[in-house]
Length: 63
Image (cartoon, rainbow, N blue to C red; front, side):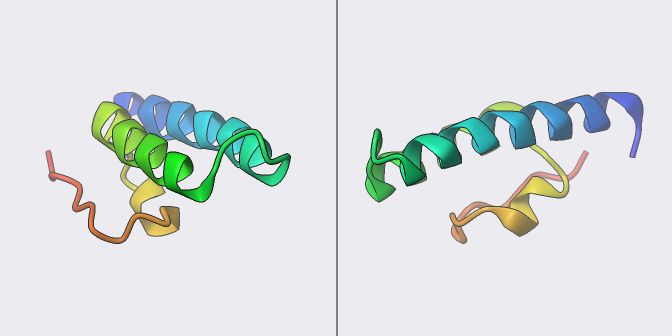
């Protein structure tokens, strides 16, 4: 994993951690969370984040 990949991974994980808290607090729905997850996967393209994503239909493009 190079520095850019690590940075993208870190940003994805931090972002999704915040949204997981919002989901648990009832601020957003599971459907909204799934949409957000898809958008963040597309934006950050994390290598490891796809393993933890609840969005199984997403396939990361390899660089």
